[in-house]
Length: 147
Image: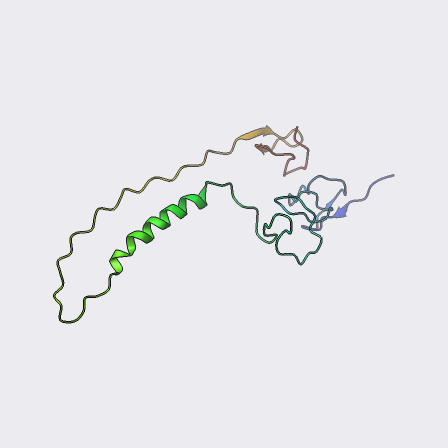
């Protein structure tokens, strides 16, 4: 008996109901219930904003790898904020002669941010030949399981 294709709930393209991922929009398990991207617990109520199991936001995309963009900007912002505080000194009271302030110390040389290595490829897809990112379980183009 032939199987009929069903529209993907995310992009509307017709696909088989047994696919591991939609080959058009890349959503993993498009016909299964929505899951938390961090702990994979089933989201029972679509009105939930955070996962009750791990606390990750269900509205935002998954967090970036730790130690990349977020860690570098926090250190630079903290150093810049500390350097700006002396420049905002209060004006001297009226009638007082402004004292000659010593020159500010030279600013430390900025440290370069670490460069993330280029993502490694797991090789080409056996179904369509598209390059697979490292750790991919399936091809995002055709849906073939990597292996």
